[in-house]
Image (cartoon, rainbow, N blue to C red; front, side):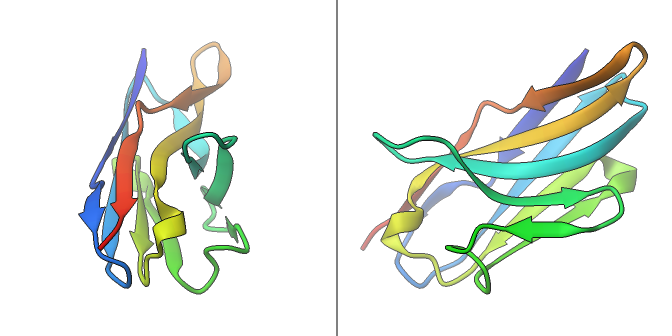
Length: 119
């Protein structure tokens, strides 16, 4: 069984910063890719950023230059440093992990963490 848990969300003023963390635990052989997604009220879930086990990254155009994704493979943990936050970044942020376990490769999702950018 694999668990994925996000932390670090909260309320921040426009222009502020937050750092999200995502930890995967359980019977994991390895994690191929991890990603952050977000879903604002009334909108579809969208990819924010992703990172492979080799460190290759991908960002949504809306967050390039402001957000930085990173991971610690030894700890099965991923981070999202969010700077220069805007009200339109307000959403529930979800962690996704593509995990290799004994019987195959599966996608796992966390429960989400709320990020609210407001003055």
